[in-house]
Image (cartoon, rainbow, N blue to C red; front, side, top):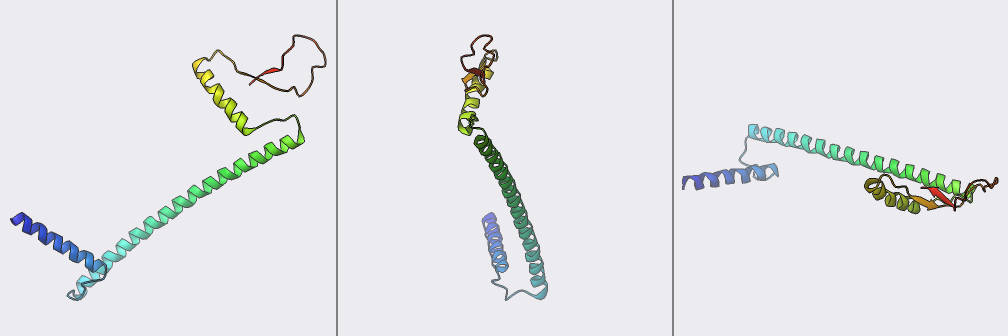
Length: 140
């Protein structure tokens, strides 16, 4: 019974403190209590602002990094597009390139002694005609 009464008293005091922090039930407080409440609220406000500015700074840094990454990707894609325009035999496709890379990863991890090949159009024809036919195979 004593524990229950003690817990009820603690609960009532906490509710009163919360109300006072919200600006309610201030009538019975003297100047010293009001000044203490004001200092507590000032410190709480300082902590909340500090946290808010930290979150804003973190989000700003994250967005700056994403923007930088997006710009680098854009520059790389524009470079690839310019290369394709300058050289019609330059058949680079980011989708095909990543697919070829992903397909070669299991081979490299499971069978390191195997090589992967892909069929490619020769940029420069074999003018000498010497040696064996390559059958348009090249290392990927």
